[in-house]
Length: 272
Image 1: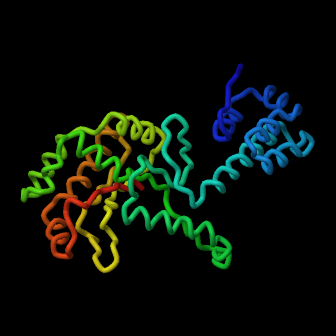
Image 2: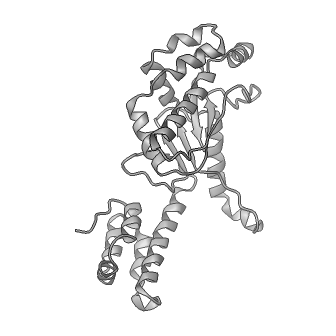
Image 3: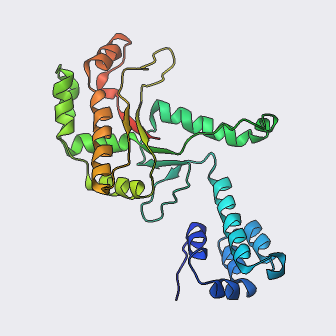
């Protein structure tokens, strides 16, 4: 056996790896279309089944055309959709990913809404032929990850204490992430090779008439070190920095001033 595909992303990858002779054999026997039908990919399966060798100048062009068809189908389906991150089935082309079942926070929720609106109203953009409007690939650690981090390191009491920001920062920088989160971020980073912005997305952030804009930290990660462990360490430190800013004096004071409770604030993090 040359390979096995569990979903259409796997099939897209395997199509580029198998020998051309194997591709032609399965294509001529309609194996690809039958497999797609079994996944209820009816429209894609029908279009694949209609392809013939004589439609292309070479078998390789046939293969590349099929790969492009599958990728296009995947990208269309993912637009405007928030996908739960699965480290065993991670698709690097997914536009909006999240870890955990908690809240996305204010900022991430706004990005998700804007992404969905762009998808639903894509026809309106056709009048701007030379303008591309899009939301960058977005990866969110929900507030569930924040809760896990706080509990894992017994940091619950910090929210009640009036400590200098540098002391809060030191507590967070010396803390460790639960292994499950580290494992998922490791897989994510292996497939991402561009600079990253690590941004806050708290529950109270971007609240109407009570904006917390500018109170929480943002970090930029170059993400270009040749050592994957170093890149991971830098990303984890950036997330800790954003987490720590949740308990800094400025946001605590603002929270009290607008009548909210500091203990109700939780932080999601956006990685762009």
